[in-house]
Each structure stands twice: as structure tokens, then as C-alpha cells.
Picture 1 (cartoon, rainbow, N blue to C red):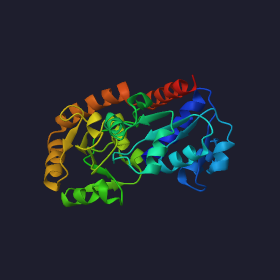
Picture 2 (picture 1 turned 30 degrees about the vertical axis):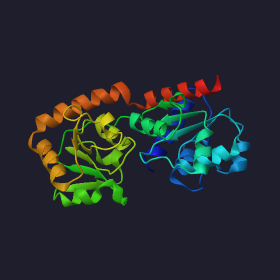
Picture 3 (picture 1 turned 90 degrees about the vertical axis):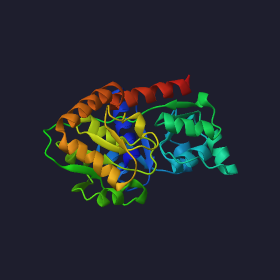
Picture 4 (picture 1 turned 135 degrees about the horizontal axis):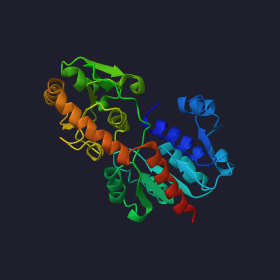
Length: 280
């Protein structure tokens, strides 16, 4: 499960808690489909017929393929989440596809600006930040955690080149609590929702100064931003390891920022507001 899939599941949970029914159309056997099914949500194999016959008041597409499928189905008002930082394609088919949604939900101000630069009218875009459920806080134990990824753009090679004893985690919800530093490196990122997990449980963050990440990590206030070089990353991580008081101050400010803006409830409420706008 990647960040966008977790956000879709959190959204479905929040909609159900608020009395709204949702149906997940996706790829059979995918982790998201299996988790949603296990939690009692309706799930169906995605396809043009499934979209047209789903009986929904509104369709929300969460990735590029879903956007294409929903645009072709053209059944009911369409909302599209845009989570990635790379530029929008300028081809004829892409321009047609990007005209179809009623609203775009940009995961950050950075992503919103990218949509505007691609020709999407600003009145059709709402910035809706990711949200996460909080993790429990534990005393720092000296570990340095980074997300495990085989995506070369996600900075694992840089983290390894630092020489630091980095633990690469495939289960951040389990591994983050109690860590002394969370390292999140990327060449390009719409937001970096994994950072929110660290913010929620009091783990100080060292993150790349790219994309929408600075909207979460204010350098020297809620974490440390870094260029993507091993020496620069190592220096900032060691600042936190050598000065626990600095890490505590940054983590406490980050936790407050999380509670103010980046909870799962805040994400669900902002999404529902966009839905209502589409349906008025």
C-alpha cells in the first residue's frame, strides 16, 4: 500500500463514519481492494461498465488510470485527486482528459500550481492535504528510520551512502514510534504523506527540499530540510542524534502542526466540502 492508497482507505472510513456510502472500483486482488473488502466496504473490478452502472452521485478518481477511466465513462460529476509533482502531459488526449473533471483535489499548493501552469482553471482546483491517523509516541531509542522503496527517485541510495545505520521500513506504523529520526528523501514529491506519520508520533524529520514537502516541514521549525546529497543528509541527521533537545523541539512543533492541519478528519472534511460543491 502506497500513500495514495492509504488516503483512499482513510477517506472511505471517514465517509462511512459520517453516514455516506462508498463503493471502491479497483484492480481485483490489489492490497487496497483486499483491505477495503475486509473492512466491509463494497468493492468491484474497475471498468467502463462498472463506473457507468455504479449508481453513485459522484465519482472520485485517485490516480491517473482511474482519471482516464472515469473521464471516458462520463457518468456523473467527476472529482480527481492529483498527488504527483511531475508536469501534466500536453498531448491532445491529455488536454481532453484534464478538461473533464468538475474539480481537482491537489495534495499540496505545489501540485495546485502545477495544474494551473498546465492550463487547469484555478477555480476548478482545491488544495486538500493528506491526513493520517496518529501513531502512539514512545521515548526515542536511537534508531534512524527511512521508508523502504525500490523506486530510484525515493532516495534509498542516498540514505545508504551516508554511512548512517538507517533502518529501511516497510511498516512505518509499527517502526516509527520511538525512532530518533525519520529520513524522507525524494527527487520529486507532491507532499510526502509518510512524513505526517512521523509528525503525529513525535519523531523529528529530515526531508528533501523538493515539491510539496516544505509545506509540511518548515526548516528549523517542524523539521530539517536537506539537499539530496549524502554528506548534507548525514550532517542533518547527526545534528538531531547529537542534540536530543533540538529533536524534541522540532518534533513538538511538528506534532502541533499535524494536529492543526493534517489529521485524517481534516482531510475527510475538506474532501466532503469539495463533494458538496460539485453536487450543488
